[in-house]
Length: 544
Ligand SMILES: Cc1cc2nc3c(=O)[nH]c(=O)nc-3n(C[C@H](O)[C@H](O)[C@H](O)COP(=O)(O)OP(=O)(O)OC[C@H]3O[C@@H](n4cnc5c(N)ncnc54)[C@H](O)[C@@H]3O)c2cc1C
Image (cartoon, rainbow, N blue to C red; front, side, top):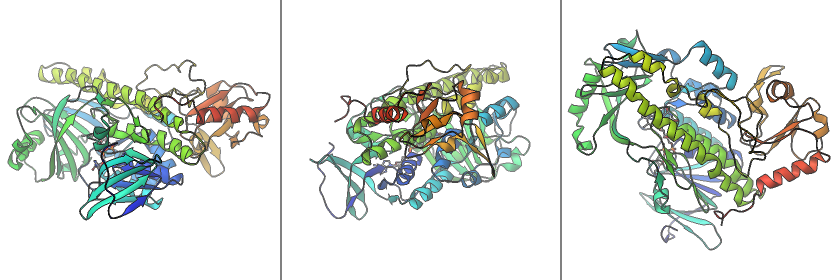
């Protein structure tokens, strides 16, 4: 496939090899280990610590990670306190005049979020999230090899893959059934497979400056997550990772006329001084160029190799959904791989990964780019004395993408009844459909418990299908999957307008696979047949 691998030194045998221990690779490792699959993760770096990038961890990502066993309390301990990050502000400089502001929480938005998810969005810096994912994956039994750089993979005559990783001590070989490319935006694996990225490769060049400073004294009167400003030589935006210690300043520049070398420590300090509007003590941790693209891979699969996360798609950060989309990729693919490895599905099920996830990435890339371009209207108002607040109020979608996070619908051979019409919502970006339609995520609703309450999402089984039935669910009792009538009142009566004898089949990733509006003559045979069809779709040309 890539190059002939010379077998030397050690050989490691695993079911699945993952290249890249970023948030997506580590999520895959955790999910796969939970399914009993053996995994090894290669990571070129020596550890997880680096400059923070992502910080918005979406509701869906939190649902996935908590279900995978990382306690919500542990995740929230690492989140920025909301009092530090209540708004996005458009300013002359960090300490200068404020021209407009977007407050994250208002009563309507809070109500909408709480109704849609048990785990509302949090702000957790990637540099704080990755160690949690690493600890979770290792606790579950994943082997993570830092200082191991993927070099090449070749298919062996029996269909297994042999991959070689370079280390300081020499090469190590890994034998696996599958390889997951979670190796980021400049994915070596994607390049070697010759998979093209579709969409604009360079929307804007930025230099990302990570610095340590305590800016709380300057911002006590107006804390914020993002501070955006234009004009002057130091335009850009600040991201507050921790107001008292951790900041990133993203500064746009023209990479055709200016190189990374231009950004000397002295110039970077000058930029920060101008952008902050004050001379404060600070320590520069890193200065790294970053190309903002809006692209999705042409293909997500080459035989037994899959692209996930930034290797498959890269978006402008305007919306904060790059990593979150990648965590969704992992959640979609891992249960399918688990089923195939356990012999419960054929390899054609894996084709539905691209069928389901690529449209999500295309939508998210488009919306992130739209958000970026719409920022121009605010910037124009800022520089030309227009009504900045009016322009901010005209684009609430930029900072509120709950609908895209929780409301996407899958259509593929792994969904039965995907030809039914979509749920109707006012705004697909912000609003979450709460309906029982095949392809959508099972809606969240609280179920009463003796010791409190639990979400309907807790009824999902990560390694098997589950049948949720109505109040007269007994008619389904002989089906060959776990079934449960607990959710009937909340889901069937309030949301689904379904008869008490109806049933919904939910996949291991929490998406509705099929809805039975009536009880068939032989419920067990019908369920067996539906699951068989989902797990053994006809082989498309893409599958070897
Ligand atoms: C300023 C900024 C803000 C952002 N904010 C958000 C946000 O708020 N929310 C959000 O969802 N997203 C955000 N993003 C995007 C987010 O950072 C990425 O989408 C995310 O990091 C992608 O995760 P990943 O695991 O796919 O790839 P990466 O995080 O890039 O990880 C890939 C890993 O693979 C390793 N690797 C590469 N090549 C090899 C090799 N040959 N062998 C072994 N290892 C290799 C790399 O060292 C790296 O550790 C932001 C991005 C930027 C720049």
